Length: 265
Image 1 (tube, rainbow, N blue to C red):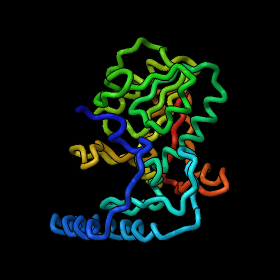
Image 2 (tube, rainbow, N blue to C red):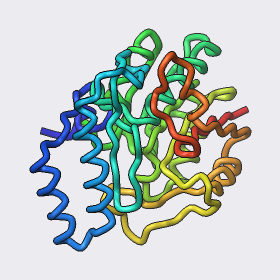
Image 3 (tube, rainbow, N blue to C red):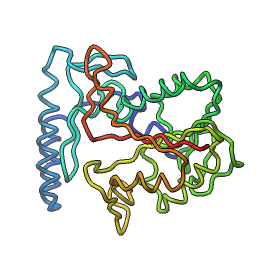
Image 4 (cartoon, helix red, strand yellow):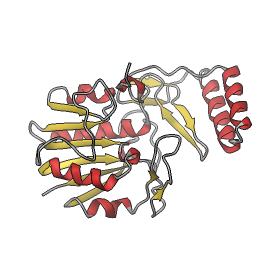
């Protein structure tokens, strides 16, 4: 069976907190593999997740599954711990909850848009179901079309709105992919892009080979210049601005997720 959207985050799947013995076992495995910083971060975040099960007072809201929760799950890598990242009810990440607000606002301004969504997340399907909405990916089998983002099989000026969330870091030639997105975008259309990065740093860091997450690079603020060379107008927004639009926060972090709105005149 091929890879599907259910294998990705934000697939409306409940997340089970690891058992204590599993936490210890995985920590030891990382230490044996000399991943000391990763082991420390993993142990710290998963112990906090384990203890969170005993919280009773709701402290967070997920705008995607419409649920209140006493906690959002932390996650980690070899660099840091990302607090309050994962909704235990729908498996959405910070960026998904912030993007939902952006998508809602954009759709209010568009009349019957034709939408193309690369690497689509199921938590957004209900938002787009009343529009002409096409899903695409090179590897996923449960999308409408399997498309190569570096060589998109559509004529120019085909879409009013293109969604590209955490895709470009997996592409060897992201500049070529961006030019393709610009080509198939209609005049006055918008491409909405997010990528993982250090938004307090200027330079994008290129990897010699894809890392363990399949990332060719970790973006910096100079990504805005790359976008500016291709698109007519660029707007960047920190998704943290949407953290408190509900009665409870949705778990966003300042300077963690920037969204880039790219326009074509």
